[in-house]
Each structure stands twice: as C-alpha cells, then as structure tokens.
Image 1 (tube, rainbow, N blue to C red):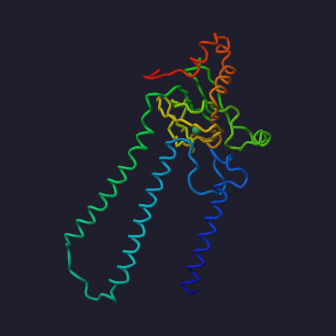
Image 2 (tube, rainbow, N blue to C red; image 1 turned 60 degrees about the vertical axis):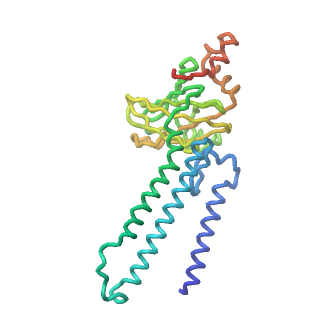
Image 3 (cartoon, rainbow, N blue to C red; image 1 turned 90 degrees about the horizontal axis):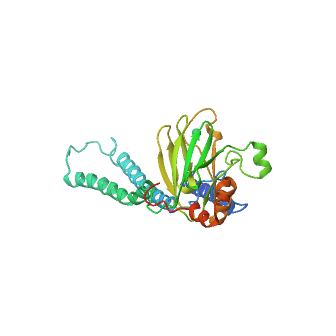
Length: 293
Ligand SMILES: [Cu+2]
C-alpha cells in the first residue's frame, strides 16, 4: 500500500470512531436520559454533575495531553536513533559518555512536568478529600453482601435497604437493569451532603461516576466523602470493590430531588416527622450540621 492510502485509511477509521463515540456519547434517544449512567459503546468519562467531577475531568484532559506529548517525543527519539545510529548508518559509534547540557535538560524537564502535575492536581484532590464546613446534612451508607443500607441520622435515624431490581422489574419500570434499585438514596438538590461509608461484612466501595465519588466501604471503619448536585435527576453507580458472588448485582441509585420533595419523602419514610409540629419539621429536616454531628 502506498503511504497516502494508509494515511487515508487511518484518518477514515479515526473519523468513524469519533462519529460513533460522539453519537453514543450525546445519546441518540435523549440527551438528558443519558446523564448519570453509562452509555453503551461510549468513550470517555460520564458527564459530571458536581464541581469535583468537572475538575477531575479537566485534570484528566490535561494529563492526557502531557502523556500524549511524552509518548510522541519518546517514539520520535527512538525512531530517529534507530535510523540515524544503526550499524550501517553509523559504523563508528561515538565514545561520548557525558553531556552536561543534555543531563541537565533530561533531569529538569521531568521535574518540571511533575511539579506542574502537582500544581494542577492539588485543588481537585483537596476538594474531594476535605469535607466542607458547611455541609447541611449527613447520610450513612453501609455496604452488605449484596445490597446497600442507607441511614438518615439527621432525620430521625431511619434506614432502609436498597437492592437491585430484577430484570423483569427493571423492564416493567423502564429503568436500566443492573443499575436501578428498588429503593434509591434520595437527597435534596443544591445541598452539600456528607456521606459516611462503612460495611457490615466485607469491603465494598461506594462509587458514583457522575459525582466523581468513589470510596471504600470497610467493615469496622468509617470513611467519609461528600457531594453537591444542583441538577435534579437519577444517577447510577455500582459497588466498585470485588466483594463476592453477587458483586456485580449491588447497584447504587441516587435520586436528587428539589428540597420540598425531599422533605415530603422524609415524612413518608419517617412518620414521626410527619407528626412533629410543623415549625420544627422543616428546620430539622435539612439541619445545619456545621462543626460535626
Ligand atoms: Cu460490594
């Protein structure tokens, strides 16, 4: 094949891949319906709905450019050396063993790259790791073989268990099988929510790709993370630590609802709140838990 043919072929397949991934990424059925869950055949990260997820996406893009440049540079150097310094082209090799300028450059350049990566990675890592002071409520997540228990300590400590929907039930409800649960973790939109994560038997992991949340659920230990989602919707994640036979069948479903809907939902889950004086209810339902709880 002539080089131009190869090049055209490569360009064409790259275009096809781009078109296919673009089509599935943006969703042919409904753009909104694809937020918060994986799309078949798609490339790239799920669309983020938290600031942390968007920061992580930007960091990912920066790192991709840097590693691509490094791969191209190293490949070009290798090819150049193979052509220019092979036995035929260069029968008498140079005996040079030191070159101060080169040594300074190949030490300083990687150090500069690493320092740059530290600079751009610090903010997203810090924001993920450190729970903000102004979280307004806490939910507790307990991983079990093979479902999740969700506890609402700020709302009367009620809890319930969330299990995967069967194939038939998911089809009947028109929700994604292997992702949808019988009971969702319901949280109010626009609130900073602290999540305490633990497990009752083996190690699980609570993961929600569109929030950029992924944290181990370890028996006897409490890990914490947080998120704030402004966009009302249903988001799906999965247990992300191999935890046994039904590891693949313990999805995480989070429903982000407007605050009044959340309050109404809490009242249905916890009748004690429905009976409390109205003046106390709403104040207690999304309490300010500054400084610990
Ligand atoms: Cu698990």
